[in-house]
Amino acid sequence: MSVNTVGSVQGPEFLRRMLSLKTRLKDRTCPPSPDPSPRQLAESYRSSALIYLYRVMRRAFPMQRDELSSKATIQVASVVDSISQIPPRSLPECTLLFPPFLAGGEATAESHMESLRHRMLDIIESRGFKNVEVALSVLEKLWRLRITGRTTMEAVRVGWLDIVQQNGIELPLT
Image (cartoon, rainbow, N blue to C red; front, side, top):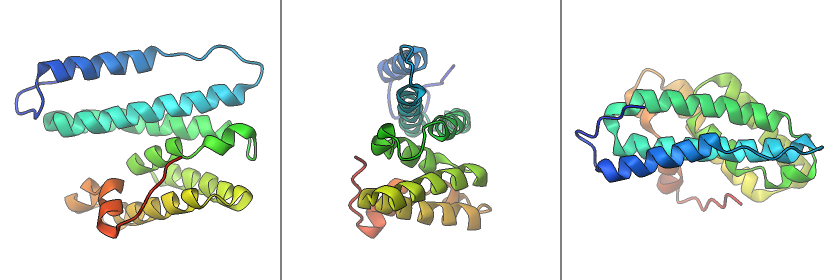
């Protein structure tokens, strides 16, 4: 990635650290396992870490917003794919909130939103986790804004953090 640091709120050292972190995350692989669920869980966390990294880089390098958003969208698809391969009600599912939440915060495709919604609703129904309920309510507000306001730039730029802050929501993602 060739990121222009002109107009950036951060300097070249920050860029170097971000790119180094991106490389380490992309190169990270899980050891083979007879049960694929932990591997898929790890992949979903790796992809969500990349989503977060791209969010940070978008704020620091606004000139690269479109390119970084595209890269985040690829990771959203990766999270959706990874979590779909984790069996419902399996042990790894107990820790499955952070990846679908971060992916949901970047999701723009309705198919991704629907897949994430379905999985989170299943976790709520089977496990009764209130934190998943709160997280899904934040995403639902965000998705409504994105779907109904696609023509306005303000709706596109609103993020989950804006919704949490505007509504005074306490959001435990564990």
